Length: 327
Image 1 (cartoon, rainbow, N blue to C red):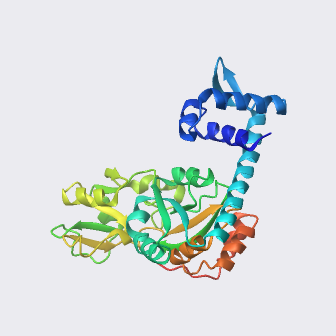
Image 2 (cartoon, rainbow, N blue to C red):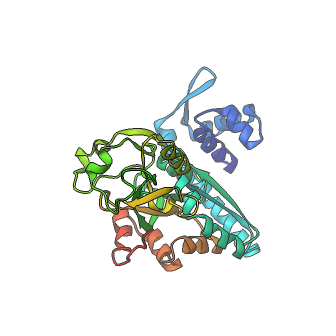
Image 3 (cartoon, rainbow, N blue to C red):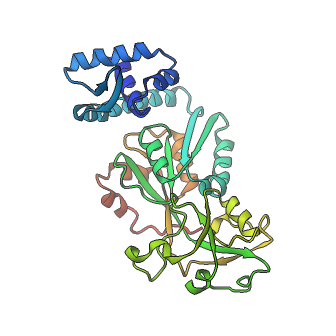
């Protein structure tokens, strides 16, 4: 059994069993990958992939277990490399993040600016997506950190830690009938079409305060238009498509001076943004500093304790006495 064979089966699974795409990404040949997979299967005495003719059709039951263990082995290999790099050069490396547009656009700029000032030789990479996409990228090792507006407990290999709480605001043009309101009732926003986040994003609409979650059903609001990008939402509010419901942090008094933001914290339950990475990740100093810049209460000691916690419940208990900042 060779390390490159484990990498090949892991990457083929990650590429949805597309050997050609895997070969392209790994700068090697399709026949070479297929041969090494066969050699590994012959050595183990079981098939990792079922086949239909010459094509891989699915991952076998044994294959799923083997792939899970192969992923752990490859992660440990990367950790070994990171340790060596840390001691070879403590200020150079790469940092990759998967997050939503809202976090990338409004929460991360000052954090990444400060990190770049402290570590100018660290290369930064950012990917955007919904929660499922973020979880997949982080759990597969494509990125170092996941930053998402929910804990993502479905990804057991991720250690997620709470950063701050936030809520929504309603934005309307200054001439709108609601513009003079300082507080809104649910009936106020039910009276108008709504422009808000796409359904795949937890920033969209949490449960309305006072309504049971199972009865929410989009809270009965008339969704006229949904989008991933907060700036797109504000554009269509300006065009008269409806009132906007956005993350409160996404309202810029300077750039959005033609809009009025009305606090909607009384209508929606607050949400929490989490940051996390794969269990067993070797945290280089600039990674620890990045987490501290994003969430100052997440010290190196707290991060170590979170990694040591065996369950999400035990991990959550670490933060029972910590009052999260609000944005």
